[in-house]
Length: 65
Image (tube, rainbow, N blue to C red; front, side):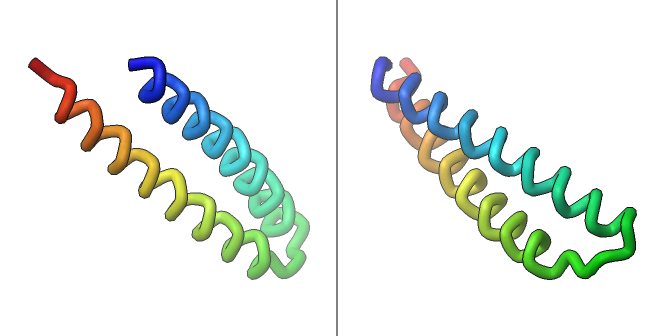
């Protein structure tokens, strides 16, 4: 359970990073600046968070009574 909580905490850090990237992307779009790098970073971060979600869900399912 402790290891699962640590994984969830790492996922939370990824969500914070994703929110920061979203803010950069949105600001670039609003200012009319190119946002392709921010979009690519967002897609990569989102893929990592999605992968973390799958691992955490799998582990939770194994621990369920």
